[in-house]
Length: 430
Image (cartoon, rainbow, N blue to C red; front, side, top):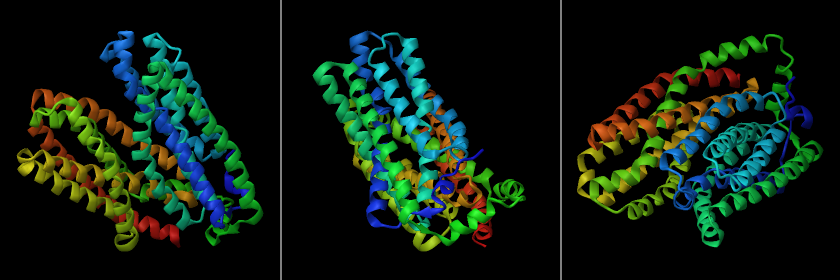
């Protein structure tokens, strides 16, 4: 049986600023911690190759094991997040990830590492979707949207922190200390999550407010036709086109991010370290895309899929400029790549965060988050292999044209989805 948090809190929401700020802080630190426990492997790979004599192919397979586990786990944990206790699912993910990181510090076998890091991907997938569900349960609609958008700041800060922690750990004691330190951080974060959110749930029950929408949702839970309505409305929402947009943006977002250093090195002859340092600014600049997408959608468009179409169009224009003028200047190329990745992260916020929040009345926030996230990571998996193969056989000019074609397909998918999505949201509101 589903054990909704709203049932435990009576549908009450946190209303005091201190409680809302504390809840955001705990969520922020928790999701920030996931980056420490996943990007540490990438940061330690060079040292692991040098110290242990492992091949790039072996460690590459270990990294792929994480993404495969994470993508599959999104479907499972997204579904579970709407049926089990979301707070405990997040704790399970963070706590088990801390154990996997600690065990990685003791591992010497490639096969053992592959097993541990694949499990790490699966358990880390139980963090975001249930966390989003808990946000929708404990916060009012306006506060929930604001909180979830601001959680995007964990991406650049978590990325930079993971590489900094890895650098310090390797300098102090070698690559194994990278995983020991990350595991210890995750262990303390898991304890903070469990205790902190538990108290906040009780706080909401004691002094929280009952939103009018929450009362209507509680009545809807007892509607015998609700299960049929859910299935019909899911199809009517344009979810097929939304899923296509999620897949396409995942391919573009991660292929540009992953291959940008190699792209700059091969086109402009810069050394690898310089290219990496230049592209390190992308995660920080990308935050502009998150807030720009949220602002445009909130103030002007009021339709997440129509706004996504706008940002796919921005991507199309930036890629067109990159093809026409990018070879003339490395600075211009980096600026245009920054526009592309910022627009993609904005679309990611719209599709993977704001779209699922609309499904709260159907009790499908976590399920939709997991499903759309899974498609995004499927796109990431395709991009990692596909772009490398195309660049090797056909060159970067063909890769640029592929990016352009994917952006155009993204616009078409979002346009088809926008009309259905608008009707769906109106039906939910009434």
